[in-house]
Every structure is written in structure tokens, then in C-alpha cells.
Image 1 (tube, rainbow, N blue to C red):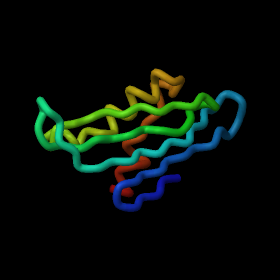
Image 2: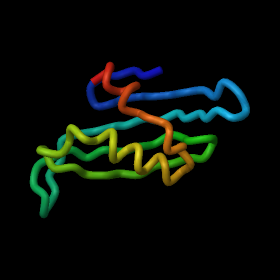
Image 3: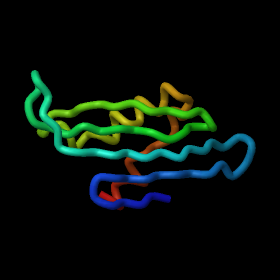
Amino acid sequence: MATFEPGHLHIERHALNDSDYSYNLCIDYEISQHPKEGQGMLFTLHGSVEGKDLKEEFFLPKDQAFDFARHAMNIAQKYGMPKIATLNGEMHKQY
């Protein structure tokens, strides 16, 4: 399930059985100015993957901000998100 409001995207999935996976992730974002990269978006990914808490920020220049889901997925994988999982499908309908 995914819900969107400007500046905030919430995505969650509940495991259906013992071999399945779950996550509860929020992506907050705002326009930001980076000293070297210029204007872009500052993203804060927070929530949990398989019960492990996570909170990380990442910045993308304005011409790369569309690719935020790939960056969020890479971070989530560091916290245990399976490689077979995709966030893009859930998020694409919302943004």
C-alpha cells in the first residue's frame, strides 16, 4: 500500500507468510541547495525493513531527482530488503 501527500510518500507491505518480507517506509522530500551540486531535492528515507529501523538522507540534483526510487531501494537493501523487492511499482501509481 502506498499513500502520497506533497513532501511525503509512505509505502508499506506486510509479509503474507514466513518466507515473505515486510517493510514500512516513508520518504520525505524538500527542495534543497547543495554547495557543490546546486539545486535539487533532499530525501529522507525512514521506517523499517523486516523490523530493522532505518533513517538515511540523500540528495539528488534536480536533473536526477526523478530516479529517487532507485536510490531509496539501494538504501533499503542495506537494511535487509530482498533484491527481488521493488518499490517503483508501488510508488509509481502515487507520484
